[in-house]
Image 1 (cartoon, rainbow, N blue to C red):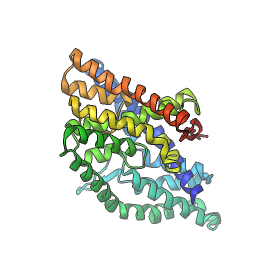
Image 2 (cartoon, rainbow, N blue to C red):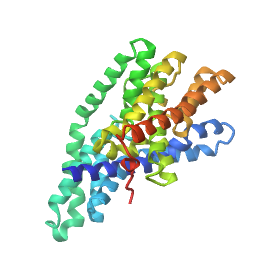
Image 3 (tube, one colour):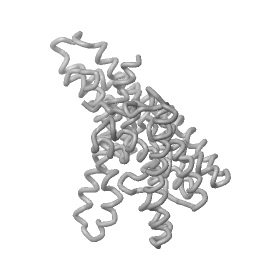
Length: 342
């Protein structure tokens, strides 16, 4: 079970990186230039379309981790797409594809599909190419689609808990929300999904943004010695790369959670604001700081505040805490953050 869970999470992490990083890197920046260079809208749209292919890519990446055959791998990807919730059929029969789906349900459907194709194995013989994709879509794929509403309700419950925290005193609320989102960003739960479901805005969104930023920057610094520079940088765009390592050893996230708590409290103190969309991105593509500046105003004080809270402090606090946990407390080591992407 541990090996199965390990491979599933690795596949999910890689799929998330492949599909979400392009938009995270350029999305908010392109929006600044599109009014002056309209042709860049095609680039932005391409990155958005790729995001909606997340379920398929997660299924394929999981299939590769389990060393499935090409037919089995593609079948798992198709089943994950069906059970993801990324599609919607309107009353007039129009099919729409939007968003990234429900990540937890993608994981459930992918796991079910992997077990299903492994069970079938070579039993279908000459009928494999004809029958396996259809069976995988119609059985694990539709089972995933059937449980989707219940999984969404579970995500909504998490959102309601977070919304309750926004009613508390701003500094305490900011710290709690930031810490929660710093954990959500390295879990299968979508931070963007939770934030949009409850329409998290204002200081709550700003604190959530800084929590995501704390994990992304912290994981980047922590993983640098165990991985190459490019892989380390990728954590800023999506800290979910560390999802497998986090589930195997949760204490690796402690420095980031503490950093998030400090930054979240400062968000309440200095009234750092955001929107439901920006709440789940953190520093990726500079979505967090740019959204804050768009809402609060591009004056010198806000630019300094944004640079300090979104860039300087996350690097400083994470560096200090990582050194404390590694060299003084000996709770973590650089190898704990090793990412296997082969």
